[in-house]
Image (cartoon, rainbow, N blue to C red; front, side):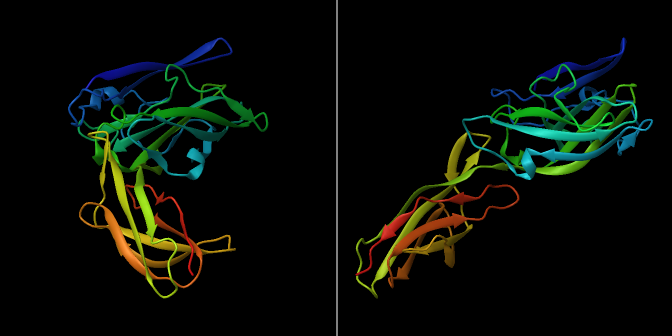
Amino acid sequence: MRIRASLVAATMSGAAALTAFVVPAAQADDAPSAPSAADAVAPLVVGEQKSTFSAADAGDIKITKVTVNGNKDVVVGGTLAKSFNIYVTATNPEGIEGVQAFLWHGTDLTSEDGIDGAIIPDQPEDISRDCEYWSETTATCKVTLTATPGVDLYKSSLNGKWNVYAGAVGKDLDVAESDVYKNHWVKRASHFASFNASPEPVAKGKPITLSGGLSRISWTYLKYYGYAAQPVQVQFKKAGSSSYTTVKTVNSSSTGQVKTTITASTDGTWRLYYPGNSATSTATSSADYVDVR
């Protein structure tokens, strides 16, 4: 795995605060194995190096809030990169110069085998100064990141819980930082490749057959594969209604197929819904209207 290096620099009132920022970036043609990243991530923090990376404040500066992707899961498929924002709010008596934030996957930011993935800012050469200043002492700053399947997300086992690093730099060069300010979920996309409700029309009291196929992306191979043994909700919206109700739940087959029957009673629209899990996004099928006569 290649190592991508950049510098985080903040220039304030004629003084400069400089920190090396080095993180691993998997390439699409690399084997899906964990990088040796201890030396790469050791200087990653924006402030003073700590022997243990707990939340650390220097001086009076403090990080008060971090929001990742609007508090929604980061969902990534197999062809399109996913861009999202991290907003860091910080306060400091002397004012806020800027922030840094990124996601990393693993157990220990400082150990040789403790990190196997990172999603870094689109402009990692500098701290973000894209800030909304609420007062002379408090600001919320935006950091934009892009997760690329096959590159940052180079293997499927990277799905699930990631760690959020956040750092802030004051105009007086004070820093605040935390290697795990919070956690956030980065999930593999799922979808229904097909759905059908038949026959159409159908006589009242006769069976309606509902069938579809649930698939999930593999970041390792950049293809969708049938997702087996997953609970799929059969949902119905009665004609004239604006909302769906869950009629029953069925499990997908070993190939991700979903098939069940329902007794026809009234006109309405049918669909399938997958609620997702800790590694996989939700999915909703197309809808199919059935006329009951």
